[in-house]
Image (cartoon, rainbow, N blue to C red):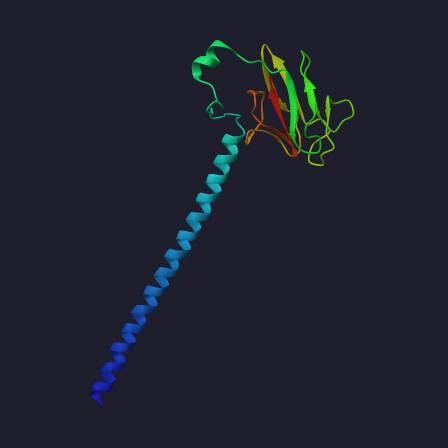
Length: 170
């Protein structure tokens, strides 16, 4: 009889200790989930903030050495639609800006539902061309980076306007 009461007291103490351990592990788990949630929000905000700056990481040139590119600079002469409903369309570039959008008076009239009426503008500055978003709903992207100010467009770099992708070619 005495042994039986002693065993029940020890088992009760162990059960209380296990319950306390489970409670502490549950608290720690919820705290960990909370911190992961906060970290993911901060990471998302950071990505959005830096993507909007228009800063691009330089990529390697496609063929050709650095010495060749220093000696001979290629100038954009053609705007080519590479993806979208107007794929294959070529527009010769001059000294005038190129307006891109769904408006009838645009230089490149898009039939894309994701493009705004006046979506973006390509403007020449010297021998370089710059793209700027004109307050579009879905944004303009220069090689995965969202354009918020006028950003220089290197030759062959994709510019996404809705579902349409364009590139500058020599």
